Image 1 (cartoon, rainbow, N blue to C red):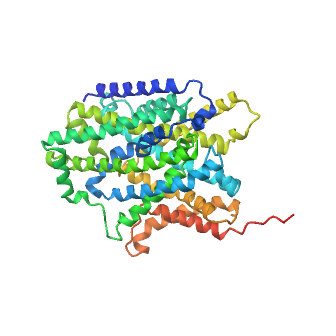
Image 2: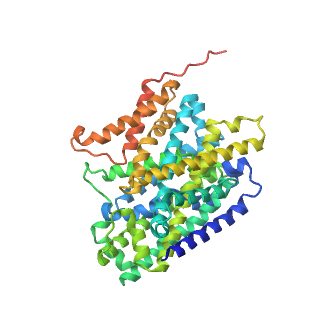
Image 3: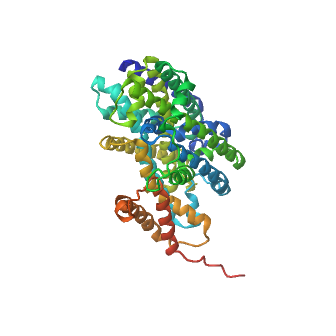
Length: 487
């Protein structure tokens, strides 16, 4: 594929998104941006959330990871499923009962001002880092296969991508994203299926024959029983469960889409449907990864990083049609995580820190101008963050993402667990210090775990440890609620 063809495909796809934006953003207001006026069809949200939850990270890193970790990621996916069940039965009823626009409003009602700001602040840090990594992955591929050929600097590539995201999210917000996610999920899944087909065709073997080869090999291993291994199956399962609870259930971006649905019953339908489909989709990505490994072994394809395996084979070995399929799939996987992140960050900061929803005396036009300013500010933060991550491109992106999640989502897990499962009151002013201390302790534990714990290495379960430390810190400085005197 020539750089010009790749760029042409990117532009055509983007124009298609702008067409959807033009239709959905007409007559949009602040409530359209925040919660889609609560008219989003649950089945549309469920389907679109596949693309939003998987993103470019799954599209690139999970297939590339199979050569190193086999199918062990499937245990994480099983954990995801049970995490979504917890969200549907515990968190969604809470959010709908309190009629929240930002889910962190619960922390203010339960604990107080500082706990509220702490929870919202940790979300902002988490989402900025996570979304920047996801965007970096796609921009990195475009740089290698398009912009480097024309000697265009990386920062120009980043700037173009950020501007495109701003344009189609600025006005419609969630109301637009609900529909663009649906479009993008379709293209992403189609790209996986077609990529599997093209690999089998090039290898001259039917798909089911290659599947047999995969299942007869070590690549199909799902369960790792070595307890000291960071991907022990129990660690993977519970890590996946808590990753989902935190990165979806305690994440404004993912819950904002659920809260745009009319009522709780439909929102729960969305979550149960999405969680079931997600299991099959993850398995599809692992199968694709195994096919890529088989192809690389036969054709002698070598890459420096596992994340580069899929694009290298798609662009350089499978022919132009397969390259087009990969590119469309990658873009389709990347845009949902970028647009949703920018929208949710704007929502959280506007409501949780600027209090726009409570300023009833302020007219809508002024609120909209402020929201636009916040939107542009976060876009600039993304721009800087992606440039920084360019200097850190040394291991699989998904590994980095979950490592970050373990440190930044852990305090949120501890806060919500304490609020939901105890009736005690916290020392609100100390909460920020507890939330900062927990990740610091976890970092020390992770760095020196083999020396301190007889060879034990932490994996994704560091998220649970972080949440537990936050919970215990809140418990130590908590007290029984003051009962009101009877009349």
